[in-house]
Length: 168
Image (cartoon, rainbow, N blue to C red; front, side):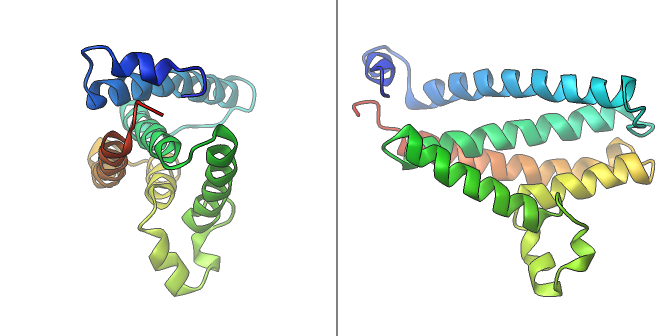
């Protein structure tokens, strides 16, 4: 938006959905490379055992990457400046991480907060990772997690498409 790229894309025959899909794919690819590097570092340097089902792990991480990218794009459509989007995005990420069980076990939180956490993709992702890594779960065990995370991502992407204004 700052460099006028959205305005130029608005003059092209692309739909808003295609613009968001392209942005989403680009961000998801970058995130997938980052996650892949972290998984490899964990495996090779720290000897982390990632469970017995690499397919389940990849599926869960891929679904979460899609969801995070979609939420980020939605945030970009809600704020006029990159600084505002970044500041609010960081704050929301930190809150979602804390409530979702990324910082500490959700069992130490009050029941009402633990229940509220299930509205966030972080809770589903952390629980799915526990299923795969800690309990040896497979693809069938994390499909509900992936479905909820994907649904949140689709809703966020749909919101981004709806809110995108290319004329800004």
